[in-house]
Length: 300
Ligand SMILES: Cc1cc2nc3c(=O)[nH]c(=O)nc-3n(C[C@H](O)[C@H](O)[C@H](O)COP(=O)(O)OP(=O)(O)OC[C@H]3O[C@@H](n4cnc5c(N)ncnc54)[C@H](O)[C@@H]3O)c2cc1C
Image (cartoon, rainbow, N blue to C red; front, side, top):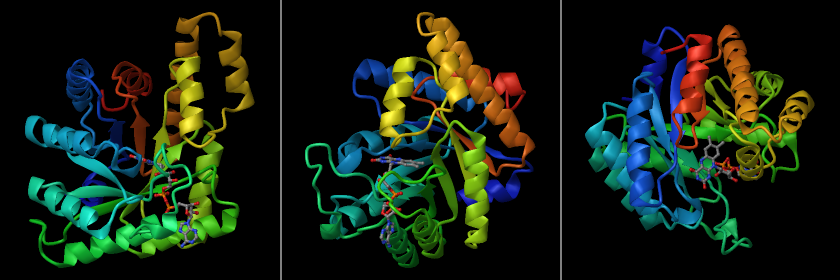
């Protein structure tokens, strides 16, 4: 099923969760339990990350296969095109089509860690918009069991992508991804809803008309906040939230409760404002997300 079909069928915002492939057998077992636990909230889809430069290619595929074969959930594999040749991309597309995967999140990705000076200009797809265009071409060749081929999502950055010097051009680049054939946008995490609402308005001004899913990360510890702020390209933690978190620095339980409270308030405000969907970065944990959904009385 295409994500667009979920939007069409749903009479309210869609719910979705992100997971990353586990590295050990033990972590894998725990992740499968977490996925089962969160499946009870009936998400429209679960998205599964792909390591930079294809570093988790096999692990992402295995997780996609697990979700397809052992749950009723719709898996959306992330697909970064950095460091991939045309034949690599087509092999992966054919494989996902054969597995019956209905949607992909099309991304450029960042340079592999061991090659920070990677020249994106040498990649078959330089930008995510090139990958979207390539998937659309693939869709037209009839390989996919769904005659429409893959549904396609792309990434958006409410606070701006860290490598983009020009915020006006950035929205043009986002529009290029939509014009190339993206069905929906999923945003990077943000902690201040005003950034999201402003982003949605700027998309509207640029003529972007696809659904925009708000990406939320529950802060559960100061360590995870610092790690994610770095990974997510410098996500801004508003002063009030930061002050509260730092004041509770010596009390991990209090930090957790402040984080859950903040994400619950973000969720409630987004739901009230008519958001198209909310996407939770679960960090492979079920508890925090379930608590937030419970706090706002949504899908529990
Ligand atoms: C929801 C979400 C999920 C993610 N999942 C993963 C994951 O699983 N694995 C992973 O490795 N990373 C992931 N990322 C991170 C992402 O890959 C990086 O942020 C990457 O740097 C940008 O990818 P993109 O698809 O936005 O690229 P693009 O849209 O190609 O943009 C990359 C940069 O190029 C610029 N640009 C785009 N088009 C043009 C153009 N025509 N001319 C000039 N400049 C242009 C953009 O402004 C931006 O600065 C995710 C991000 C989000 C928001």
